[in-house]
Image 1 (cartoon, rainbow, N blue to C red):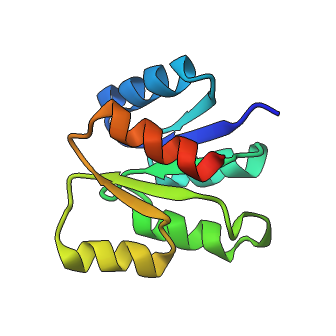
Image 2: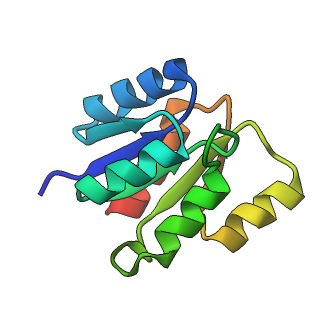
Length: 121
C-alpha cells in the first residue's frame, strides 16, 4: 500500500521542497496551508504520517497535533514537527502535545528522509 504523507506549512516554498523530496522517494503527498486545512484534509483521506510546522495561522501545529491525538483512528500516527523553533520549552510543548519527533529548519533532506523511512517502516 502506498504511504500518504500530509505536509502542513504556511510557506509554499517549504511545501514544494517537502513534496518534491517525498514524491521522489515514492510517497504520495497531500499539502495543507495551515492546521485548519490539515484537519479538513484528514477528514477526507487516509494519512500515514503528518509533517507539520509549528507557527501557522488559524490552527497552529500544536493544536493540530492535539486534534490528531484525540482521534481514535489517528492516535498513533507518526507526527514530525518541522520548525525553526528550537528552544526547549517549545520542544517540550510539542512532545506533550504528541509529536513523534522534531526537526529544525533549515533541514537536510537526508535527515528528514531518514526519519520518514524510520517511522513508516
